[in-house]
Each structure stands twice: as structure tokens, then as C-alpha cells.
Length: 240
Image (cartoon, rainbow, N blue to C red; front, side):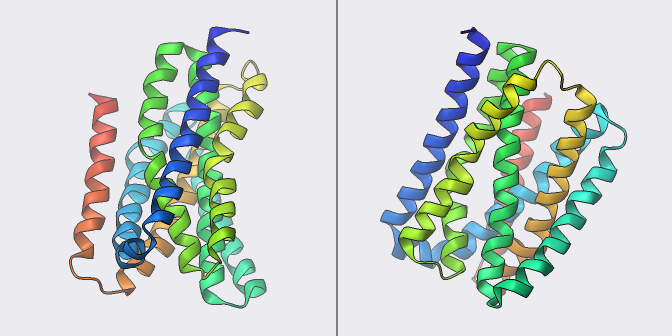
């Protein structure tokens, strides 16, 4: 067993554990979560709309000049996916939960693929990239659970789906992608990153932010700006 695989596996599993910790932390303090979920939604929207625009999409275009088409494809995919889910789900809140969870699931799976790719380049590259990704896992677990709360899903079911979609998909993506790393080119990764960027821009701009601001919580815009600020900090820490 190579050191590359061991380090990748450690970070992939660690991301799942931290994500799960976020889910169970917010379950324990549910009353507080219900009062503050609009702020979390705004914060999440700030992070998820800024990160793909400042980091994922530029990186994707560097690797493949056609990544912008994949970003548009990811956005359009979510538009039609949203329409299909709303048609079948009937309930507006349930449709909202499914659409956002779908986007988070894709994002988490691609995170796992990124672990596999970066650790295949070098252990140092993987370590630096994975550290940045792991930082947001706790918040992502919190956000995923709150999304299912907003969709009026029962608590035990919400916990199960949040773990399945946000926690387990990252190691799943890493372990599935790792055997193919010898065949995946930088150009192919660029297309994947482009698609992910389009998905994240859609769910943040079209769902999370309007849903959160619709609650008209006082100072919620500052939570959004806080998310943008965190994204800027993470991006600059990678670039400088």
C-alpha cells in the first residue's frame, strides 16, 4: 500500500468525520439552529457562490479552455433538474431540499475526486489542497442538515440523508477515482471542476441566498458577506 493512497484515505475519511460532527452538533442544538438557520444559509451562499467564481472556475479554465462550457452545462443541468424535482415533489419546501442536497452531493463527490488527483500529483500538493477542503466540511454538514430541516424532513431521516449526501460522498469519490488517476488528464479534471462550479453557482444564487434573505432576518446580509470574506481568505491563502 503506497504512502499516497494512505494519506489520501486519511484525509478522505477525516473529511467525512468532520462533516458528520457538524451534523450531530447542529442536531444537539436544534432550537438554536432553527433560530439561526437563515444566517447559516446566507453564510453558505456567500461561500458557495464566491469559491467557484474565484477559485474553481479559474483553475478549471487553466486546465481546459472549454471548462466554461461545462460550467454552463452544470448550471443548465441544475435548472432542468430543479424543474423535474419540483414537478414530482409537489411540495415547494421538499423540492428546495432535494435540489440543494443534489448540488452538495455532487460537490462533495468531486471533493473526493480532487483528493485523489492532488495526492497523485504529490503528497505535499494533496496535503495543502485537502487542508483547505477539510476546513469547510463542518459547516457543510451543518448546512446540509439545515436544508433538510427547511424541507420539513423528519429528524432521523434528515440525519441519515445528510450523512449519506454530505459525509459519505467525499471518501466515495476519492476511493472510486484513485484507481483511474493514471488515466485522468489535467484537461479532464478541468472539465469536472467547470461542471462543479456551475452547479455550486446555481444552488447558491438561485436557492440558498433567496431562501435565506426571504426570512428577512436582521443583519442576514452580513452573514452573506462573512461567507464571501471566508471564501476570499481561503482563495488568497492558496494563491499567495
